[in-house]
Image (cartoon, rainbow, N blue to C red; front, side, top):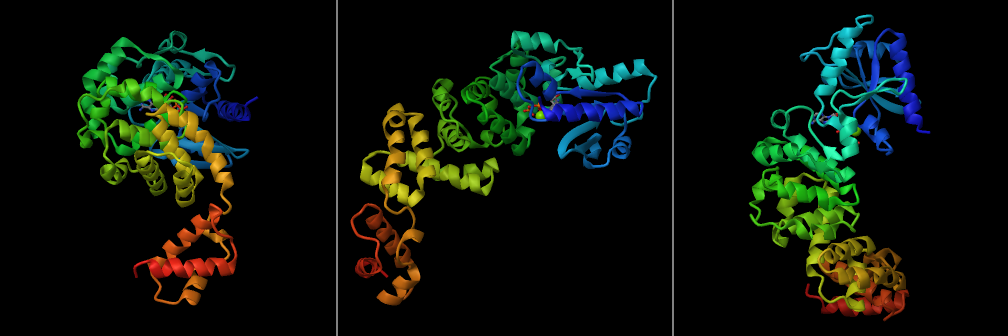
Amino acid sequence: LDRRKAVALQVMETIEKAGYEAYLVGGCVRDHLLQKIPTDYDIATSARPEVIQSLFVRTVPTGLKHGTVTVLQDAIPIEVTTFRVEGDYQDHRRPQHVRFVSLLKEDLARRDFTFNAMAEDRQGKIIDYFSGLRDLERKVVRTVGDPQARFREDPLRMVRAARFANQFSFQLDPSTEQAMCRLKQECIYLSVERVTAEIEKIWATPNCSIGIELLVRCGLLYTLPPFYKWELPVDLDPSGLSNMDPMQDRIVRWAGLLFFCQVKPEQIGTYLLDLRLSRRDQVRIKACFALGSRWKVEDERTMKGWLLRYGLETVQRAGSFTSCFDPQIGDTVLPQLEKWWSELIVKGESELAIDGKELLEVCGGPPGPWIKQTLHHLLEQVALGAIGNDRSTLLKEGCRFGKSYPR
Ligand code: ATP
Ligand code: MG
């Protein structure tokens, strides 16, 4: 079975033998009940972080401020967090069991949604004070306690509600949804990173449109950083978003979301900076968006030129992006791309029989952008089979082309 769970149970046993209590909590309990594989195993305990550090050989103080210590056992990380008591942590040894139960309950009550607020003991018993099991069965996202109060406490929970509804194909409980629509304005103070992290989790699911549609429907997209800065059109229509669902690639989905927000190609650089994605992601999303926006004639010659210039992956992404809005491209052009790619005789300048240095030596003249242009011209000629890939042919054609290039 899941080795990580076995390790988590071992960790719990060690804690219990030292006289404290320990429970599996949060996502891993929920995911087991949904018969999904948890991303990580979290333990809540009555022992203070120092106690946890003394009980295990390998620990990392990942969040001492929040009472969290990561225990490493057989290279598997398990997060162990002390029950929180009014901002402080106290040791709670047995046998004050009654106090314990109330501590566990308090810990669970601080959690966002009922299905995230269950615990499981070492014997596999589910502790469910807030009807999380019932909500899992009803397929409902519902806050623990009053939704308005909980969303005010941490507005990110509104985005998480949409994320979980998306991830599990659940409905929002009516009062939870109402509170989201009512309190959307609170979101403007969230950090961009927390918001994009939740959107990434939406991208990681097959039907991402459900999540984005919810954000649009409640008006959250208009109040979330950095989106609210962009002054989005008030009449965004989420009905076309489901076209994004077949596109599993997160780069394509980011590009699709920006397109949906009616970002213009010349704005995309700034908007990507606003999103604080990695430099690498920014480059890839920009290429996907730019190429996709220019996608008009999909003849073989043009496409082979693009493949040589941008590479297979980028062109495939741009094609996927375009097919969100023009399904015909997905049906006809996308399957062709790999074939066209394989037909290219060479795929990069490094495969040419000459390099820029040789070109400069033989053709003469000051170095400059003409070298790059000439090499690309030669690459196209060779790749498409117009000329052979041998030194003398390349130098001859290279010098001819290079001379015609303005220096
Ligand atoms: P995933 O499987 O995507 O990791 P998760 O439920 O484990 O989902 P995390 O963000 O890893 O989500 O959080 C772990 C647990 O911590 C949650 O199950 C929930 O109980 C609690 N939690 C996380 N974020 C919040 C929040 N903003 N407010 C209240 N509780 C939260
Ligand atoms: Mg988690």
